[in-house]
Structure formats: C-alpha cells, structure tokens
Image 1 (cartoon, rainbow, N blue to C red):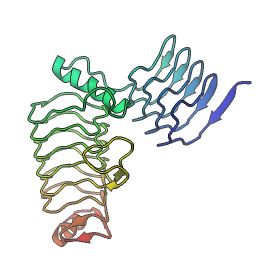
Image 2 (cartoon, rainbow, N blue to C red; image 1 turned 60 degrees about the vertical axis):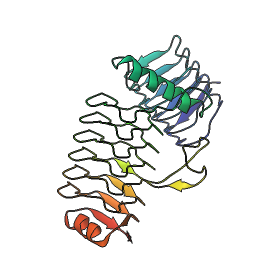
Image 3 (cartoon, rainbow, N blue to C red; image 1 turned 180 degrees about the horizontal axis):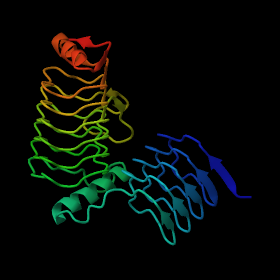
Image 4 (cartoon, helix red, strand yellow; image 1 turned 120 degrees about the vertical axis):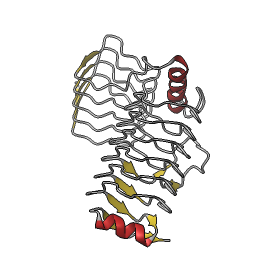
Length: 282
C-alpha cells in the first residue's frame, strides 16, 4: 500500500537514512532537516519545502517532484536518475563563476554535507567577490574576513556562523538571508538590502566552527556600519549591537528582541519605526 504524508512539519529534524520510497509527500516542510542518505525513490513529492536541508547522498531516482523548494539544499552525491522535475526551485547554479571560486564553493558544500569529514571550508578572506551571484547558496561557516562583496547577490543565502569581519558589503543584496550566529564586527554594510533577513541565535550541531558545540551563538554585529541600509522586516534576536551604526537606515517593521545595545541605539531604532523588545542595555 502506498503511504501518503500530507502537511507534516519535519523542519530541522534529524532524518538521516529515513525511507520515504514510494511515498506521496504533499506540502511537507523539511526545511533545515538532516536527510543524509534518505530514500525518496519512486515517490511523488508535491509543494514540499527542502530549503537549506542536508540531502547529501539522498536517492530521488524515479521520483516526481512538483513545485518543490530545494533552495540552499546540499545535494552532493544525491541521485536524480529518471527523476521528473516540474517547477522545482533548485540551489543556485555556480557554473558561471570563475574556476577557483566555483571549486571552493563545491568543496564547501561537501564539507557541510559530510560534517567536516571531507571537502574544505571556504576561505574567501581578502578576496574580491564583488557583483557575483551567490543567491540561495549555503555558506554556513565560510570566511569572508576583509573581503569585498560590493553589489554581490546573496538573497536567500544561508550564512549561519559565517565570518564577515571587516568585510566591505556596500550595495550587496541579502534579502531573506539567514545570518544566525554570523560574526560581523566592523563590517561595512552601507546601502545593503537586508529586507526580511534573520539575525538570530542558533545552536552548533555536529560540526565545530571555532566555537563550542552545543551552545547558542548570537549574531555579532559590534561596530558594523548599516548606514543607509534597508533592514525593513528584518529580525534581530539577541544580537550584539555594541557600537553598531544605523544612521539613515530603513528600519520600518524590523524587530530587535533582547539585543545587546546602547540606550541611544534602541531609542533611535524605535523612533524610526522598529520594534525594540526587552533590550539588554550596555
């Protein structure tokens, strides 16, 4: 008997090796889930979300995917033999990038998908990546210290624990980007588009990115420059905002919850239309 699973939330679940072969999956949410070596062979998957999930080595052979969101997913070693793809949103195509950049990104996906056992963490420190299209890519833990990302497209990218120490990101677009635990001291983010971006805390899971696993890590934004940035509807949860510059930034409907900030910063944000909740004053 063919199994039917509808409107079920598996978000962030550990489903390594799970067997969904010959299953009908409808409107299931598997975003951010660990689905390493999962078996979806022969399944029909409709309007499901796999955004930012780990599908390393997953088997989709003979399956039919309709309206499925695979943006930011890790697909290293996944099998799509005889798979039908209809209106599927795939991870960004890095084929048009320069060989060195593309190779680093490919190794980084392997590094993430194997929890650091294979591949290599991407190191773009002091590199000029201005204007590149990196939308939807999982760049968790990558190092962009001192790099130039002027006008770079990072919409829908996963940037958890990513290092942007002193990075020049003027005019970059990071709409809906996920920046939980990002390390951004002295980052220059003037005129950057951060609408609906998320700066929160997250717990390290399995791989150690220079911090201690098992602890919650907030986004570190001390002395970052958001002058003139568009951060409308962005969410900041427990972020460190010591010395952060929001002069002239568009902050309408943005939310700052339990953030560490100076009293004048909180007052400025509230005056300009942000929702400042339970600030931790410094």
